[in-house]
Image (tube, rainbow, N blue to C red):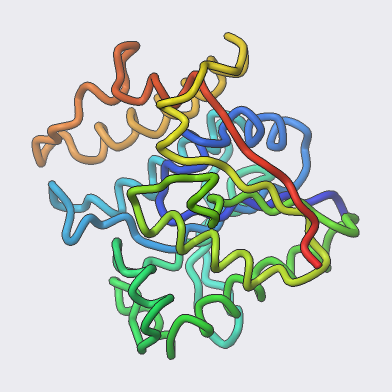
Length: 255
């Protein structure tokens, strides 16, 4: 048994941009680091063919950047009666729920049945999704040495985390529902950090940049034949630099 830490986000590049400096340290510590991605990040079909699967490969490449060039071991695990695609890479485990991009806030406020975009499973509604996230957290917690493992996620409080992307806020509410007790929680600020003071040193920023460049570099490899329009994502002048140089979060204890 070993320690476990969780990162829950709606999209495949959220933890790198908004909490990457801590995720890098967690992976390097040798703890089991579990990533849960609620949506496929498909952008309604994506700007190029194979977009959502390329984003998954990019997320796993970020894991390899921090954990080393480990093989990717894919499988399907059952949580809350739902088959969830997962992938182990070294001491990291990633789960892909593959819900439609942009669907989470509508589900939270007007729960209805929904399917993963690849047809792998169906959910009865919002509570079903929250219970699936909770089942993933609880199973890994039970196999760890942590009494109160940390769950990192977007802050649901829009007064503290003004967030234009509703998937981010809804994911925070999903984690809030899934961790009523037994977990410590670190709530990260999303896009708004670009408007705040730079507050991490060059080493931490370099780790975030490395994670992000691993992600974007893999996407470029996966989508080159389709003519990816995102060639500027991986360079030093990336549009992501404002977020890479900043990191804001708060912590609390569930329950």
